[in-house]
Each structure stands twice: as structure tokens, then as C-alpha cells.
Amino acid sequence: MTNPAQGQAPNPQRPTGSKTMTDLLALVDAERTLVNWLLRQRGACLADIVAHTQIELAATEAMLNDLIATGFLVYDVSADPAVYRPNLVSRKPRTVPDQLWNAMD
Amino acid sequence: MAQVISIHSFRGGTGKSNLTANIATAVASHGKRVAIVDTDIQSPGIHVLFGLDEEDFTHSLNDYLWDKCSAKDAAYDVTAHATTASGTSADISGTVYLVPSSLKVGEIAKILREGYDVGLLNDGFHDLIDQLNLDYLFIDTHPGLNEETLLSIAISDRMVIILRPDRQDFLGTAVTLEVAQKLDVPDITLLVNKAPDIYPRETLIDKVQTQYGVPVGGLFYENDEMLQLASGGIFWLHHPDHAFSQEVHIVARQLIAAES
Ligand SMILES: Nc1ncnc2c1ncn2[C@@H]1O[C@H](COP(=O)(O)OP(=O)(O)OP(=O)(O)O)[C@@H](O)[C@H]1O
Ligand SMILES: [Mg+2]
Image 1 (cartoon, rainbow over the protein chains, first blue to last red):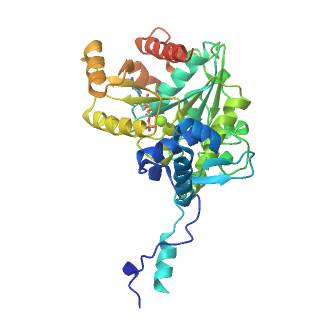
Image 2: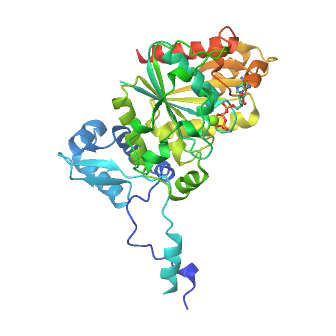
């Protein structure tokens, strides 16, 4: 039997929209400032983001991709041009029971 | 551009709902179009100041967050409910809308348990601004720092923090200010409420401003008339000549001046 305490493999299927405002506070300055700004704008396209951050394109894109990977942003291609939008919820989905079940497998 | 103003305090009972209703109505008396959103989902209450109860609303903020209605459907024109001491409607030249939060136990529990999409709340604020053609959107909040208050801080143009001259409030306000700075709030105003009348005005204002390095927009003394009114109305309409009411108007004029 596996000890649940050792079953700490991160859930690869982490649902999007699982980040909260509290998580936002924990981001490093540059990322937090960018997400704050996107929250106020309610999303922005890459050109506008680059114009705002004044950081070079490649670095900005890398930061945006990181924020998508960690679930803070989504890339909405239904808009033209496509926009980066904050993807925050007020409560975390309860993933603990799932993790426990996985650990018991 | 409409201004989004959120009203906070770290601890409960500082006077957020009363000051929000009073200041918002005072701003509307200058011909402005304002809305108040009750984001205190856990313990809603600001509708009481307009003499309204549950039966007066078909929709609430909760319905909007569950996609059961548009944000505008949950906004009620309460201008005529701002009454004077004689019970007649005050002649407010602007308009006051209120978006109440549900008072149904099941609905409160559901939203606290399941949460909601933060983007939807943010979109709702902007829908209200656009569709009701607002000049100001006031957000009344639950005390302390929780997900709802963090969002309202993050998207506001101005944050008003209310504190009492009390050591616990002083500590909590420092925490709230730190969070506001992390969320890049452009303007912050402190309001001191429930000051005991033993404190001279200038001394207290000076002390608070020095402590936080943030301007004090108003100082309100604890008073019996307010206690007697017991949230049964908009104070300045009931006691137009009271020092508290004059201070409400000073704050309202500051908000209007800051925008123009
Ligand atoms: N300056 C004042 N003098 C006397 N009583 C006051 C004063 N300001 C507010 N009160 C009273 O304090 C009580 C709490 O006020 P209010 O409900 O506005 O606070 P709140 O911060 O919104 O509370 P909560 O944190 O529960 O939402 C009310 O009974 C109100 O009448
Ligand atoms: Mg309140």
C-alpha cells in the first residue's frame, strides 16, 4: 500500500482556472504587475502588452507563456487579434480528494 | 471615464456600508450617476440603508455570477429610496443604483462553496458602467482580505480604507496597504471613523498620515445620532447640518475633484 503522504506527484491534469487572487499576490514582481495590468484591461493582445511593458518581445512572450502554463492566463484565439486574459477564480476546485485517490491507486 | 472606487476595512464594523451609502448618495447629489455593488456576499447589508429588503429584489449579484441574469438586471434604481428624516424622497439630482447580494442562506452558501469566475465579476462591473452610463461605481466589501476584496482592490481606480483609531485597526490597515501596493492601486484614501471626541482633529489626522504616508480624506467622530439612526437611512439626508454630514460632502467633493 502506498502511503498517501508520499504520493506527491503533481497532478498533470491541473485544471485551468484554478488560480486565485491570493496566488496572484505570490507571483514575482514582474509577473504580478503584468497580470494586475491585464486584469484592469480585461485582456490585451501581444502588441499592446509589449507596448505597455516595454520589455523586448521574446522576453514578454516567454513570461506570457509561463503564466499560461501555470494557469494565470489563457490565450483567447476567438478574439481578433488574439488576446491574453487573466484566468482567476474565487475558490480553488477541490483537488485534494483526487490527489488522495490517485495516491491510493 | 468612470471611476471604480472600492471601500475596505481590515476589521468589521468600521462603518464601510454606512459611509459608502452616504458618500455615493452625496456624489449623486452633484448630478452624477453612481452604482453601489454589494460584494459582501457572506454578510450583505447595504440595501438596508435604502429601506429595502429581500422582497424588493428579483435579482442579485449572485444571479449574475451564475449567469441567470445580466449585471444590469441586478441593478435597482434606489434614488427615490434615499429619504429625509420626514420620510419623503430627497431631491437627488443624479441617480443611485444598487446591486444587492442575495440574502438567501442557500445562495450565500453555494457561492462561498463553489466560488465563481473572477473575470465574470470584473466584466459585470464594466457592463454596469457601460450600460448604466455610470460616473462612479462604488464597491462595498466584506471586511478583511479575502478573494472578493482582493479582486475589488485589484481593479479599482481608487481604494478607500476605513479605520478606527484603534491599535488593531492600525495594524490591519498596514497589511491592507501592503496588499494594495502589490496590486498596483493608483490612488488610496484613508477615512478615520468612530473617532472618540477626546481626540483633536488635526492631531489625529496628522498621526494617521504620518504613520501610513497616505492622505486622510476625512475624519468622522463617533456620534449618538448615527447610533440612533442604526443604519435606518442615509445619515446626511436625515441630519444635513451635522458635522458628520459635512465631512461626507467634503469627501464626495474630493472624489469628484480628483476625477476632473
Ligand atoms: N461615526 C459613527 N458614530 C456612531 N456609530 C457609527 C458611526 N459610523 C458607523 N456607526 C455604526 O456602526 C455600525 C457598523 O456600521 P456599518 O455596518 O456601516 O459598518 P461595516 O464596516 O459596513 O460593517 P461590516 O464589516 O459588518 O460590513 C452601525 O450600527 C453604524 O450605525
Ligand atoms: Mg458592511
